[in-house]
Length: 502
Image (cartoon, rainbow, N blue to C red; front, side, top):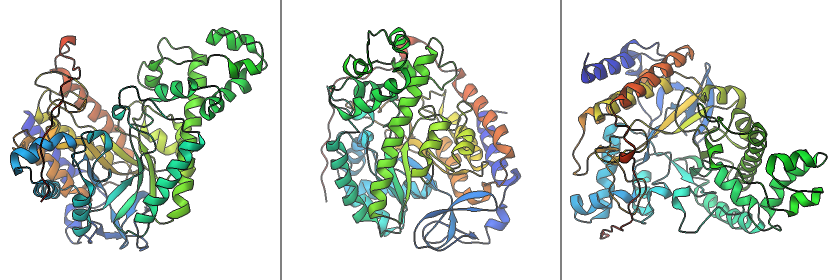
């Protein structure tokens, strides 16, 4: 069977032959409420989005009391598409905003789980919030609000590093920011909840090393070093042996140069990720990651709840290998749902659900990028594969009763901005000329618009679906060049566009 025929077959299988909780015929008997909720299954009507478990499945419930399955595009508006605004709309920003929104609706996306844009996708400041949020409000398009407690590493200016997240200055500034944000949105029924941005804890080694290398008096350095004092204070010889130090007392652990962890620690939960890493370092590193995560999540939760008792908290949208299941459990008291990116076989998000006791919002799911020139992440051979992968991912996520919904890590248009490290390859549903890719958009429309027909109530299918998805990824990337000379490196030139406001 060729790719297009296989793609069609997969779509038909989703809508007709899955062991669905709702059949196509049954779902057609009900309407959607003004928030996109399906009236076929109802929960409590509270006036705000909240979560409920109904017949064993976790659901978003709309303010009107109906079940809602969110399907979003992670980056609906980006600074890397300023050229589309200029070339297709003559620099008319509002026309660009309105047209992009109509495209989102036509594709069947029913909300934005990353506000109007994500900061690392708008480094040139092109995307301006007010016209977009006004459109969301006017058209009853639910959205999440960003409280960006940590920058994505791609947002750093030259020479910039992570802040001391334990310092009084950091906590004071963010307490004021959270208060201001919550007072703006706390009574808004269209807001689904708060998230802390993409990638802020994806570079765990970078963050921990930055804290440990701060001056001796810094709060974050002392908090982390207290772990070493508690663990090795009675066995300094072991500490010195593991970390190559010459501590003669507990005070020396606090005063001497701090341990530094290799960046390869970031891949410790990936297949083969612990190869060559000392088990003692791995154990200590995981404790420090948990300390950092618990601190961030507890702080965010406490400050948000001072001002807003109404909205959900999703936390940071993280790579699935950033936190282990034990750390997800430790931060669970400060979240309504955990938000790892990507459904993969290893690490297993099903373990995160089971151990944390919380449902999952799949936060930044890839479905492939085609690279005609330089190759980077999620490379697949062609756009047919992207459509097939989208279909299978939706089938996989929908088959797990603990997965609340999904935001897809792709963009409306191919990206083109020489200042950006993310504007690489063909990752758009539309190309650089604004032309539709039907082999991508067709499967997206089919899966999104039939979402209440494909959601399943039995997790038994999830394991086979994830296996099938991993095999599909392998097939999709088999034909991609492995030539190291084709691996992408960021260009240096700046590329700017002129945009007028109407």
